[in-house]
Length: 366
Image (cartoon, rainbow, N blue to C red; front, side, top):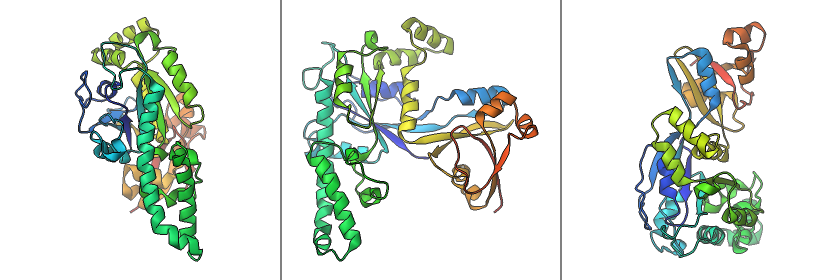
């Protein structure tokens, strides 16, 4: 599934350093703005302890984790919505993403230039928010002009509904809030889907802190938490420079030793990838066999035929049934044969909604 998270933020906040930790695709990282001009795209594996456990039980020839795409988008500046810097191009890159990872500088260091000359993550957030909101407002107003006359006559119910939804979003944007705060119902979302609004996308704020603040954060993180209380957004604290050092270590043992010395249980990038996966409302099911243990990505709420279609379209077209085992049952009992013997392998049909962690085999006929 080609779902993407876009890393955004002001220039020089640590986006490219973070991207380098996340992906094998190495973005240039330097101490000056606009180091990254074209978006770097990396396909990264999603850490999942369940896959490792299943592989230990099945001992397959191959192990294939699921993935998500991360896009490193060059830094925005004030006036980006009007084309300042490389604004229009950058905003277009964000529009193509499904969720936003907003990196904010939350550390003091006189040796690292700040584009505005001072460290203030709340102000930095507002700069990005404003530029995205202005661009969305431009899109909403343009569409409203097309529907205004029809909506006023009241004869075209579709136009009336479209105009009402657009008005709802416009009110939020004009109040300095993102489109996601308009609290649109699921039935209202299709009326603005064609606009690909930037601020309707789910967002996670990534606080780039110094090593001393890696576990508990600092005053900058506290200020940001207070500022985003009314938003439906996640906050993650990470030390990009330290993550870069962890990524450079060659063996698992070296990485674990380093983490232990820092008092951390796992690399921050692992938490970031998992959080990004959830931010996209994605879940995982598994297929298990001696040839391959594999994780498959599905959207939350997918039914069995659509989940089968992720493997191959023929699986969905000719779907007959799914054999399903719960992850906990499989791990507890130790094998598919054991699950089958005690009735923990069940048969599900077309209306079955797949659960995160299900282990599945599909029967189909084309």
